[in-house]
Length: 402
Image 1 (spheres, rainbow, N blue to C red):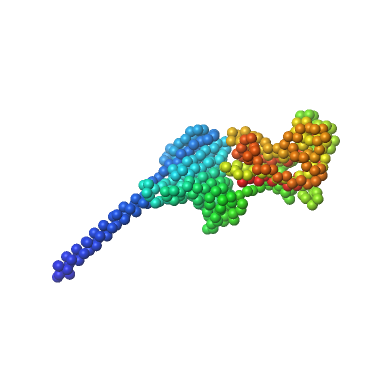
Image 2: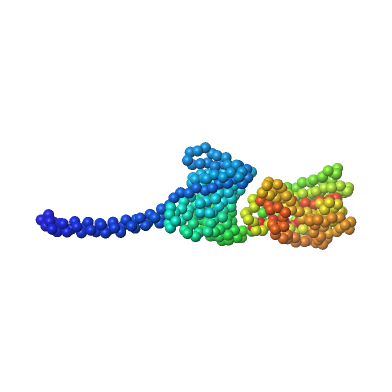
């Protein structure tokens, strides 16, 4: 080629032209690729609804307390902790939001979206859920796809949430539970993935694969069929009230007509009040919004010395009391009594007349539309006999929530 300068010139010219053409196409392609895929980080807006929220800023600032009705911007990498008396919301740049229930803690690992309005990169939110309960409502993906991911690092689990969905996630030390109210979730752990559809739930235990999805509705009562000893989930006590009585009733596990049941009895009551109580702590944070709260029970009343519900409609031979907390921290009760006679015409508010000596299946309506104030946390369940002398039984009791 050295002996043929003309050939060398043409070769150099051809290579230069090829590089020119390549650059001529590569530069616009590169610019287009950048414009479509460029991203920028975003902040999230935290607002405390009740109590105090602690925010740890990754930019080196000290942890900050955010009090009721105060709001601040939290960057990617920030950690938000809600104590046992607080509640907060986080609004993301793409219109999804998270409600943090008391005792929850999350880290905002990643938050970014397209730099330009015509960009095709997904709007991305990645959270590390470290404990407690949260409710997530994902935004509808319109201009660009949504990638909303919740991780539980210590459980080794990842939850990918569909857009325009509603989800509740509870994380404890050894287990997480994912409930899909609307939309769809993909839950991955130990190399296995399950798809959870609307009105379904699954759970992930530490070091295990996700469980197969089951219906979202659940029974919150432990040992509600009394197949195990009575001290599993329950405690028994007597409340004599303030009228000077000292004769306790009994609540013992027995069998009646092929059923395992708890038998409430009191004799020689001497016309004074007593309550024989079977109690279980529930401590369940209600989903938002809940769709179903129902109480079911199989009960029987054999005898009662007080007519109806007693003088104040508060002394039935068998009663169910569900105690709950509202959004302001106040406690309220839903009460249902059972009786078979009211010869004295006593008030029977909250009472249900049933046949004497026969098993009766009670199913409440959905309580949510009828409660005077909506529950945010279910605290405890009591099944008890009340009055002077009584003889009654409960064979099953359930609190169904969805």
